[in-house]
Length: 139
Image (tube, rainbow, N blue to C red):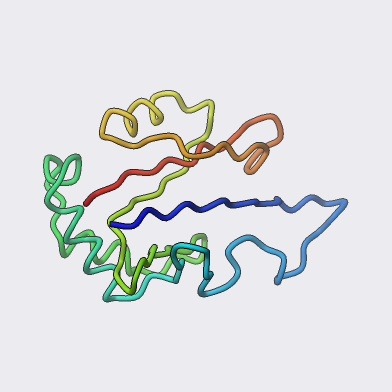
């Protein structure tokens, strides 16, 4: 599988400097990058990803089914966008997560199941705290 290195620069909305809709992070449906493409998750991508996840821990051990994971990945949630990483027209077997730097139990959990730190996003959610971008390669 080709590696996809993504560098994300995100600015949070501040009352003294509000952003327009076009400036909000991940406002677009698709992003083309040097080695891959991020696109809003569609049913086909969600099926590929749910099939990968259903047969590995922690989802396998916790009893998550492929259909249950598919429903989660495709359900409407106005508070988030789910993107698939596409390399050479195939959905990549990569999972991304963010965890607040102060949430040490969550960081331990993700690291124990094979996630690696990729980047630190300072002041993303709250001033003085970082969000840690994590990645797990599944294939």
